[in-house]
Image 1 (cartoon, rainbow, N blue to C red):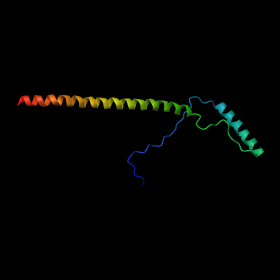
Image 2: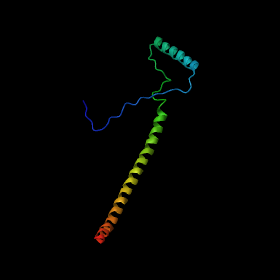
Image 3: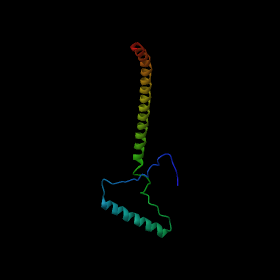
Image 4: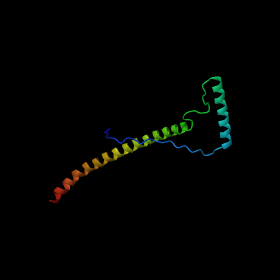
Length: 109
């Protein structure tokens, strides 16, 4: 049982839906791959699918997410700086007017 002070992120699931599907082309490629696999087995070689490249569908999306994350971190830093400056200005006004408030309260007596 792990106890953690921070919330652990949920597992992200990648869901890819192709926009266009050519069934004939897919069947042709499947027949071609089956023939190549069978030929490699007959020759005693190890067969490897050359058309498959891990991450070929998500590589561009990862780069886009990295770009957006950089922009988001810049916006977060800018928001933090603006917030700190506004708090400092608020306290400066509070201290400035506190002096006059005490003078005002003493004059009311």
